[in-house]
Length: 100
Image (cartoon, rainbow, N blue to C red; front, side):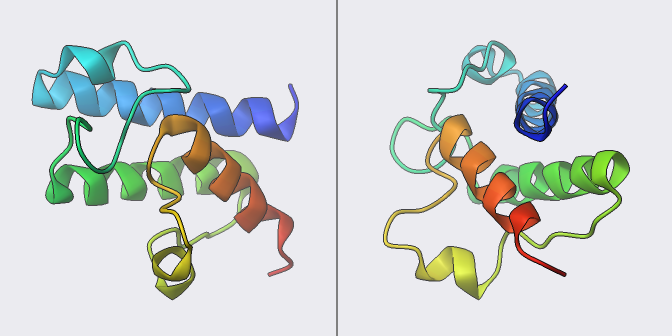
């Protein structure tokens, strides 16, 4: 499995688990296009923070690296990396590509 596939699995698992815990069918059946942030996202700010923490934990468990996804770099992006599942996957991949 490629690193991108592993990241995709981590993010989708976290989103679907959030869907289970919040009883949200859209998140339970998440795809790459599922919205995570903004209008029609299905997540409030607390659930988004918990989702990000779950993704960070999943990344550590699989890759053995600590990554912080919700920081100044994320806030300074012209478009939020938390918009959709696909943008979050791309953001995680970019963060892992940076040297520690």
